Image 1 (cartoon, rainbow, N blue to C red):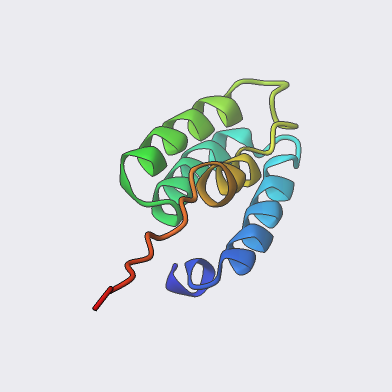
Image 2 (cartoon, rainbow, N blue to C red; image 1 turned 120 degrees about the horizontal axis):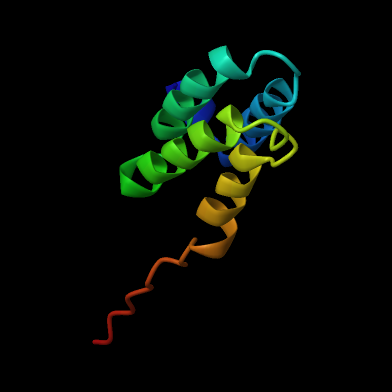
Length: 92
């Protein structure tokens, strides 16, 4: 998993690929638990676990395969909550 998460744009590419796999019809019963697991591993912490549960539910419900949950999670992680680092300036 470290290969995919090392670079944020590599993670975006893998998220788009995983969303495309999720759109394949008739694999929902196999893909739902695997996608939930992958989501929890790609995105760490409680946010990743919550997104993994949501991904599992989204994939198991028929007709919701078009929702790009991995890509939405990438945007949430890297665009919405990405806070700039604080800069400390030493004054002598």
